[in-house]
Amino acid sequence: MDRIRIEGGRRLVGEVSVSGSKNAALPQMVVGLLANGVSTLRNVPDLRDVQTMAGVLESLGASVAMQDGRVTVDARNFSNTEAPYDMVRKMRASVYVLGPMLARLKRAKVSLPGGCAIGPRPIDLHLRGFEALGATISIDGGYVIADGANMKGGEMTLEGPQGSSVGATINVLMAASLTPGRTIIRGAAKEPEVSEVVRMINLMGGRVNGSDSTTLEIEGVETLKPIVYSTIPDRIEAGTFLLAAAITGGDVMVRGARADHMNALLDKMIQAGCEIEVLPDGVRARRAGKVLPTSIRTLPYPGFPTDMQAQFMALLCLADGESIVTEGVYSERFIHVAELMRMGANIEMGRGEARVRGVPRLTGAPVMASDLRASAALVIAGLAAEGATEILRVYHIDRGYERIDEKLAGIGAVIARERALPGQTG
Ligand code: UD1
Image (cartoon, rainbow, N blue to C red):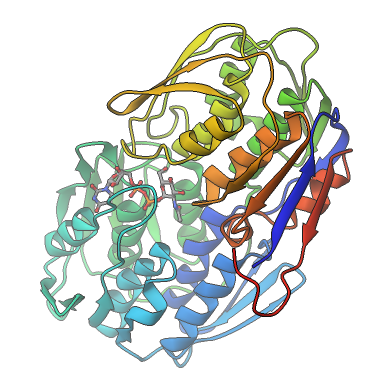
């Protein structure tokens, strides 16, 4: 397995471009299944998760081609009603195929996704939504078995104990867009990635109202047309670069970043002592003074994103005082804490929250990537640490960041990927 080695302590300066959004592209590839034709997505990042999704769609009979950020999904032979464990276990977002399978094939057998490093991630809300549309659902042998023969519009609330669900909203929305009658989803997620799926479906001939609000009204249509659509910039990747600039006391413009998708993060960065400049074609972050202690609580959009929590915590490790980091979405999402402490951070864990006492410096160490955003936090910490940081299990980063090592090197990081030799582990 590859490793990333970083010589810390270099100020990052310059300009870096943001890639297309992983969390928008994944469901949008699946939206392609809703039209009996060939849809094209542009600005899709070249990531492992995108390749995994292509494999999932192909296992259902679709053809997927990927080149230079363009992904075409030919759904004319979409006919297989089973998504096997071997596919779904690689990536939770595979469960998105349930919606189109129910809507177009009326039947679906999809493996339940397993556990995941950031804690339990049930899909009960997805299933509740399909049941509200009249689908019959059972669980057998680790699979969801769903029958959508009698589906029609229905009303539902898709909120769980932590609030709205991005995945459940998108999944049910996809099914409802081709289900006869009127569906009302209350407690819908408002993340930009959800609004983008709404926009895409509407451009395909769908009738969905209420994007950006917590109630979605969907009038089912008989067919949707194939489409050419561009994926929005990745707000999490952009935020990661802004924090990399901040932690190194640098000055970086992230070209293509959309400030309107990043308000909660930008507000907290300002509170933490960063200067933020919103430009017509991107966002610039710099920091000259101290990192100020700043408490954050993650929440569904427009709250502070859970996907930025680990990276922000890396910055807070160097703050001039104490900050509290509270997880309101995944209460167990703190696996980066132990690794940050190996780099000299002073963090005390409580229930669903971490007390981060700033230290004057972090020191490089060998550390282990354990999930996508936790790994990004270790990269950020490594950029500011004294000495060398070596990050193992880099494949987690590659799931969600396109060429992160090259992009950071382009703004002055001393970072290198060491390709694994055959047979080498770790
Ligand atoms: C998506 C993102 C992920 C991000 C998360 C929260 C993708 C591919 N992934 O994941 O990067 O961290 O949103 O912003 O877009 N829940 C239930 N029952 C369900 C579904 C969810 O209880 O059926 C809970 C989850 O455990 C979690 C909360 O709801 O506590 C939010 O999860 P959700 O928004 O569904 O996350 P994902 O769509 O899986």
